[in-house]
Image 1 (cartoon, rainbow, N blue to C red):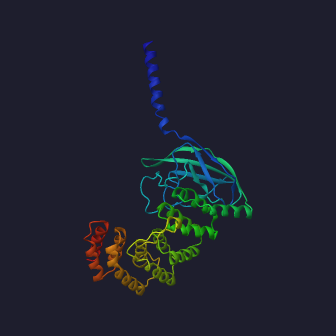
Image 2: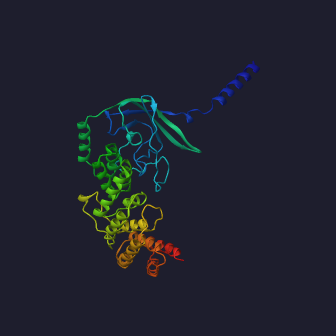
Image 3: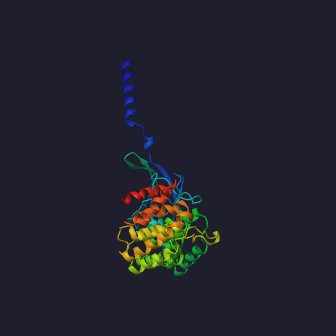
Length: 375
């Protein structure tokens, strides 16, 4: 009897050790749904019931789905999604969301990574990944959900675009988390392009970032022309400075026209438009100085080399600098410091940097850094 008891205990212990802790590694079930008829050339928002708190967008790149993976099949064949380009400025936990307050929850825009450009029978599976040592691991997963993509009539498509454009929301959450991502499906309609360019002037970085992502849906030459015309008419913005500088294809004529337009905004104070005129937010001196520096002094081959234009712009910046230093906020003066640091060698720029370096704010710290570039 004693031998039988010991054998039984040993057997039970062995079973416990073999089974191990399985609950902690189990993949939870995720329920997903589509709450709308699905048409070619229109947005499709996929909803999840339960799971982690999904709040799109996760970063200023519209293609960024955080730690969510959407697999799509058409007529049983797995599709290759668009490549995700995370913006250089994105930081923080991989699975965290940077969505503005008010962004819709528990849904993702399926059409961003997988444009629904052909009719047919599709299926989708949503997997939630979790950050783990050594990479990511599945945390929850749905079954394959089958749906049909229908061919919209020209009238149905036109009605959808008109209704969307007629009712843009005002709050950043709805703009970045619903309106602008839905508008991706309208490309290459030039009305959508105009809207994306318009929201490059938003004061909310998530809104302007999603708008910049939308420009990637259009032919490059068309986008460059729209951006150049907007800068000439409305002036620069922070997002426009980055977009215009890190896309190639600009001509000497573009460069000269944009520099001339931007120089008009070297003002010592930041005038602000009434809220009723948003999202064409005020074109500010910091964005003007940043764009000038990017065009003339960032060696990324986006802009043609034009020493005479650079000399002319430098003279205008040096002329405006004393009043900018005296009357503008730290952000403007900080951008001015970086521009002055890029002018080498220039005794007047060095003198102005020495003056700014005496400030106790971020502009002063930047000037002290820029002075080391002149040594």
